[in-house]
Image 1: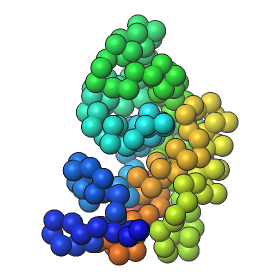
Image 2: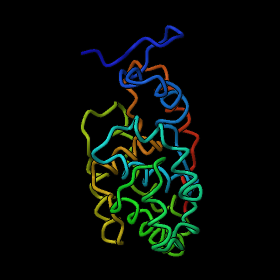
Image 3: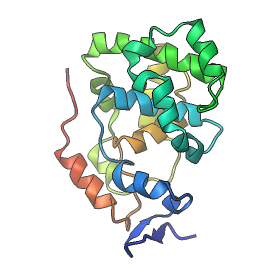
Image 4: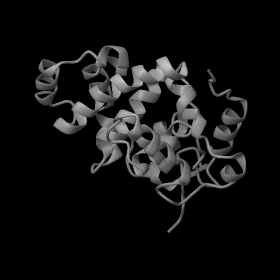
Length: 203
């Protein structure tokens, strides 16, 4: 099976972005590009958690609804959610109505606040798990890595939920901690350039 497809501009792209019409723009403008904004990082961790057992297409189609439901994934606001908010969200047909995942977002928002106090920012902590540059020379084919397992373990130890190594690996792919665009993908070198000039936040 080919790892690429030909896009509407005649250029090669990762095969998965042909699975749904909305995937192309996501693939070309978001997936793999480095992210330093704490709220965007928190959003992506939460959405990857919601994806567990579902397709990314389902989550991407509902992303704006998720953003509205969870205050733009501002963890300072989400951390104050109460049982009343949980009941409200369980009635929201625009999102995935899974009690455990909804409660995990609220819990993780509280843990994110603790991390920011401890590390200066969520980004400073998460980017500490970026793999060595030598490991990024070629796209990976696995669904986990030593780094995703280490980050998953660290987050769980801090009290985070729905952050298993596969979920964390998908998160790392999406926010640029790794570049898993296939070798012939037209976007891979763009991501590589963005990562090269990106300065990970430090405390």
